[in-house]
Image (cartoon, rainbow, N blue to C red):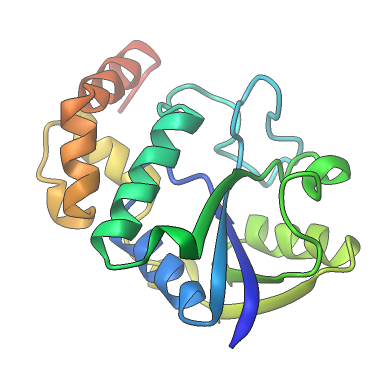
Length: 190
């Protein structure tokens, strides 16, 4: 088992496929750093044309703090001890500052399901980091995506079965489901 691991994602909204990824990485290390990409879309906007979801409020309705709390609560609910994980900003769009937030001597776990994931792999490789690909899947094998989930929430469709129970509770308690609906219809949802 590795001492320290790092994973990353936008987690806009945390769903069960994210949990699969989080827990697969946690099983491989004692301490897991969960990196939240685009912690602030103004300070760290998408810089690659392949990063299609890193610039708009519709694609990024949750704040860094909301994602932090949602991930923390879900990991605890899934039985991960609080001393076994940290949650940090992960500005993948600014690789020159990335290692100010995440440890350089960790194993960086990834899943590769898109050209953007391939580019992120290249970014981490350019920083001379130790990378382990957990799985490589075609887009159709990926499962639920944050985009699909936000659309379901916005349209009032059934969505709770795709997210950890604590995440569904968090979204509703904090009115984030309503925010997603408002953003969706204000900014041209389908």
